[in-house]
Image (cartoon, rainbow, N blue to C red):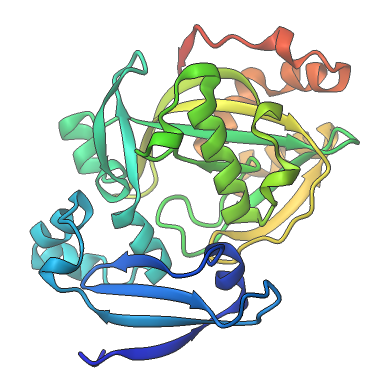
Length: 304
């Protein structure tokens, strides 16, 4: 990329997702990106993204850039094939580190939190959430993770699985508001569901699980995962950077999916399979009866 200021066109989806206000700044390693809408109307089909090299005085030196600075050539080479969007999120997103009792003990880049070497050597454990969204017919919305996901690409899983970030709005402990805020944010990022269709107080936290699961030789998960259920009819606009496919399923179709997974015909995420095997069908009864609150147990952390 030229050292001079350059202009590129961003797709309309990026415009919808990111450009809610006038100028905003986003950072990828070595460059600052300044985005401004072409027009004040939300119907604008594209936005102007000004890209310029990052100079030392242009932003505070954060842990994400520190990670990049410390990366040796072997790591850079091994990450060369990583999707650009996923790489940016890996270094920009700061996950919340917790102990096995869910006490916050610090924060770390999404990249480091998912390196199996770090997980095993430093016992890095981060907070996460898994959303199970049902429609008014009590069908569960599943997603297939995109092929570009760093961990567990193309596996089928529950509606949305991600992490609250180390930011004020997502660290709020009272009524699990931080996790609910994160769930609302990611359901828009991944599935295009507007926030107004998912009021944060409609998410019902039912439980927490703690699990560890390798994805491949390099990447994996070690999460303390909040399980959030919600019943809403929503409009979907899946983001192809995050989601390959979506479908609603009933109980019978879930059982068929499990049979296919057992036969090796499809892959399921490990956290989804743990929830299905230990909790889902009982909690589905409460979804249909409208008694989800009665099923909640947020005092126990289930180590699975």
